[in-house]
Length: 150
Image 1 (cartoon, rainbow, N blue to C red):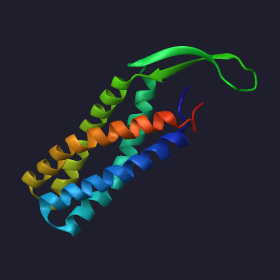
Image 2 (image 1 turned 90 degrees about the horizontal axis):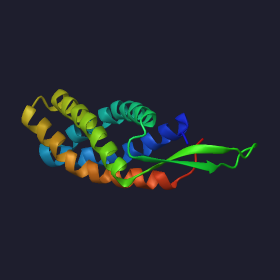
Image 3 (image 1 turned 180 degrees about the horizontal axis):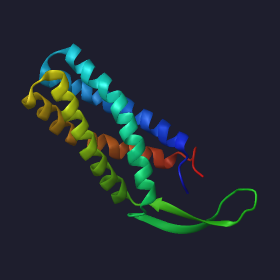
Image 4 (image 1 turned 90 degrees about the vertical axis):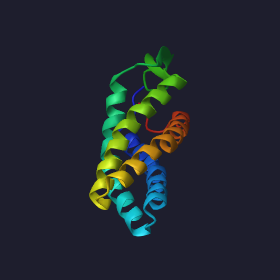
């Protein structure tokens, strides 16, 4: 099974809502300025949707951590199809790979907005911990949603 492009976009938007809220909160905690926190969150809203979409499409190419199964899919010809089911650890590794790129993006944006390396790195490295857990939960939720799968 493959995800449609629209599914990847919608999945990216739902994740970005969660991720941006987390970044705004962390940015506020480390800067003490809601305006700065909102700027960082607003910029990354756009950069990370693009990055997340590309990340999703790349992970669809690799079947690491997936179980291949042959299954009859309800389509017009009822022919058996090869589908891949994700193992739990794949979601964790996928989340870690996304977090690497996401953290680099957050740090760069935070440097640009705050002009302070220490605050930028504090925001970026703290979100490693918050976002890996949040991403894992988001990923597992989307595995239960069948919409947008071919």
